[in-house]
Image (tube, rainbow, N blue to C red):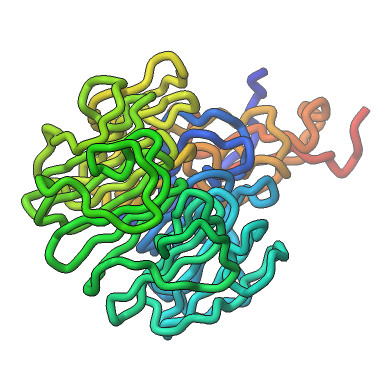
Amino acid sequence: MAVLVLATGFHTSAAVADTAPIVHAWGYNFFGQVGNGTNDTPVTRPIPMVSAGGHDVVQVSGVYLESYGLHADGSLWTWGNGTQQIPEPVPGLPPIKQVSSGIGHTLAVGRDGSLWAWGSNDFGELGDGTTDRTPSPVKVPITGVVQAAAGTGYSLALRSNGEVFAWGLNRFGQLGDGTTVQRATPVRVKVPYGITQVSATGEFGMALRYDGSVWSWGTNFSGELGDGTTTDRPMPVRVDRHVSGIKEIAAGSGHTLALGGDGTVWAWGRNWAGQLGDGTVTDHATPVHLGLSGVAHVSAGQGESLAVDTAGTLRYWGDNTFGQAGNGVASQNNPVISPTAVNGLSGVVTASAGIAVLAVAAPGSVVVPDLTGTLGVLASRPLLAVGLLLGTKDTTPDSRLCNHLGEVVSQSPQPGSTVPAGSKVDIVVAVQPGNGCF
């Protein structure tokens, strides 16, 4: 209920927000993966993350229950997993240059070439020679690492000499060593020399070679290896030779995206939610060429696909059960089967596909919520939930407000105002007057 505002001389200290790119998130948020101070789910439109953990981010990663943001200074921040609704730094790590979050474990590559792992370890996916789960980072016995990829129960690491190593679950040959033997320490993947990128999310591995060729191994139930079959491969095979001149790969749980040097995109594998983007829900064991151009970055999740173009536009296609499309709708029965621009975002730099979608983009504008009647001690929550910060908190003692003690009775900017994301909202809270309430 609206309350008479008695405060005088009230003004806002809400400075214009920083215009540098910040993290935006949306989708499944039951475990706090969106990082906006709540676990309200689903979040069907992009929410700008205005806490410290959302600024100065150069890479994002989050496939399932937790999200990560790598900062320019090498610090790694995390949120979600049911314990953190606001980003906090991951302790116990050196400066990091790349992070990969899987279904149950995470890998982080140090600027010094070291590799760190934490989370579930039922299959030896942490690579420390044990199957002991650990919530804190442990050092993997491998050096000279330039990039890592966390799959489902297994891990990949690319060394500076172009060699690839793997460890963990191997029931489908996803370690690429020619066997189906589980490994708790790194073994070499039998790919050709000269690998420049690896990717993994599901139970198959992918590698990009310097000559633009793509190689794959592991499970192939839906044609995710792209070799025209559905035969599992414990040894790497080359993806269909029509896919050449590739500069980036992204493996999802059952599908793959490949970005060509010409800015176009190929896709293959599982397609139950339209994640291949060809306008159908039909699996493809050989690559299909999408009608996209000018693409600079791709990302694949469980049933989600993303493409960022050189103009800073983010396009999404795939599962929309939890609002991953960012279009204001959450519907399992209405997937997005063709690449569609995510409205409300501009200047997108990079993005990560998952049941919660993450994107680093220009801040944009948000609408100020009505805080009237909200307890002053809880005012930050609805502000963070839309991408705003709490500014000054003044008090007004007045006997006419005794039924509203502790509540917000005035705010600036006013409810319904449109302001830059990250702006501050000042409030006035009713307190008991000196002569008490009667």
